[in-house]
Amino acid sequence: MTGNVPGRHAVRRRRKLWSGVLALIGLVLLIIGLTIADGVAAWVEVIVAVVLLVVAYLVQAVARRDTVYRRDDGR
Image 1 (tube, one colour):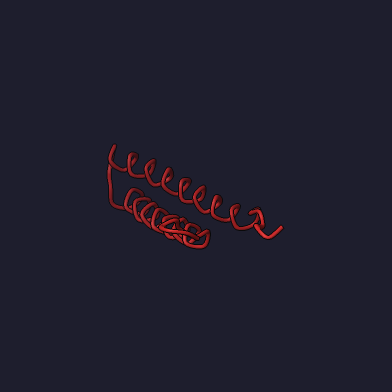
Image 2 (cartoon, rainbow, N blue to C red):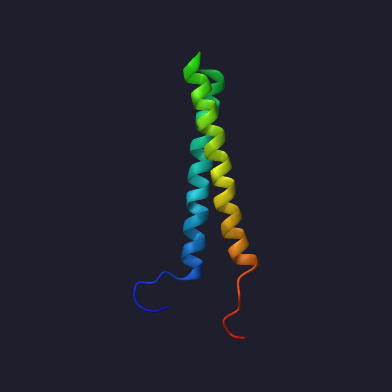
């Protein structure tokens, strides 16, 4: 690691953090959309929540794939 280039672990940790934040926001929006919101606002919140949950899953999958299938530099 040279200069300001982040290490592999820092990037993975940041991706996992963003994945968790997106999932939490998605779950909160889903709960609000299904229980409190009414009409069009409810559908918009549910759709946004599902999109956020899918994006959170994809970010987590990228972080996991980077961990499992990374190239070893020592070869």
